[in-house]
Length: 231
Image (tube, rainbow, N blue to C red):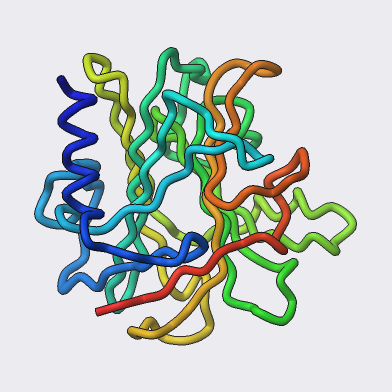
């Protein structure tokens, strides 16, 4: 029944709504929120989602239809991930007070986001696990060791919860807008973005994407879609 209710909610949100397949709209919010992982809350209700439900080659991955919603305020950019699962792959002894390097070895949801439309190989990466672990990275694909970008600190907030009965986990991100764009936040601003999710134990894990990379890595900025701030 939970799965059916979720599908009905998604249909209601998307009915009559048309958006390019490579674009997500971030809806303006009057007030900031903290640790809101409830898709039915006043903050998230009615926000149109996009889906990450295909592998890197663009093939549908049944059973893991991941929903992403976004909002923004004068100070922050928000994301909510809704992630159905069959079995979780969690890091033992999680720590949420500090970032967890190499978090992508376990179940994780990710957003890659950049504001530079000329040098697209520079962007930021944000990750969250079902246990609320997190990491943020300043990516420069032309640097000798672009992985070293994990020492960057954006000041973003991450929160998560697991609905064991419904076999779904929810991930919340609140990212300071100044961490991803030199401009002030404003309706009409456009950013480059892609969304990803890793689920299950490697090497048989599921890797889901919003925009297919067609390569064995998530780091393909040439295929990023766009995120547009709207009123």
